[in-house]
Length: 428
Image (tube, rainbow, N blue to C red):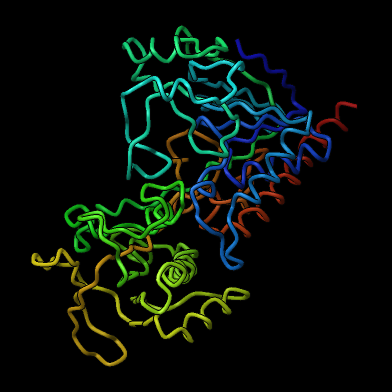
């Protein structure tokens, strides 16, 4: 049974991505009791799936390692994974929160040796790699996962493979009888750091994402570049496994469009500029990137990224909103059709691979949770409104890049600290 001690001096952080980890750490390192919950088996969120950050082009494993070291060292912070909020009641300084904890079927004896993964044969879609490949039914979510413990997929329970996994473990770490738990906490403030999800590219029918395997999304391309990803770090066409050296990037795929997401997702332009550097990294002068854009939004320090891309002879900018994508059946190449709005010339350009710079939207429908918070027309929580002791960190509040998300999370932590401090003063 999970034991958790919480009072109205406790801050609850919902979501263990970069924003949730930042908010939880900042509050805990200020001496506050913090509980950080995450619905997935490990912390990291979307950032853990990135190949590189922009604009410095460093790998996120560095930042992850630092945050995990801080989490392990802080006694004020308790992390509970595989946990979701089912109900919230109360008011500022006195919230009652019901939590559901799903079974991992692996206990704290686990050393992440991997023997259970070797023992089972059943495979499922790999969520960490956006289902681009398979993983075992007993698995470590990714190599830097925290907690560093394996997970038994619940679909394995009751099968011979589950028994094979249990038999293979010499540390008695697999408990196939684990049950779902439900606990109730009393906390003083709650920070929502539930992150974002990519817009469903299937909804953009003219771009044929659901019909042409060589049309992929920007998040899938990111995983493709990772050496731990579905292609081992190679840019390969899903249709035939061949190297793709001529790549088109389509901006505002699902953003700034009244048919899909009205808002600008902020990161898409810079994400595509970053990804053109991957093409050069892989192929040098032999690679070719074409960016189809409405306008490039690379402000402040990101302008250098745009300036370097403009000066790169392997990168071509086409000012146009692509009308549709068709298929060249002979080659399997996607063909982009539209009008260049600078020269007003019609084009039908074939490329070996198309990457949709997909829009960002909140991962949670806050209107369906019954929270006493103000939600804007795009589905994000408005922090400028009076939401009492409820705050939105990172992409729960807006479409943000990593830098702005962590700044926002720090601000949320400070506001949550003020709430519990005022309560403590009043009680004192």
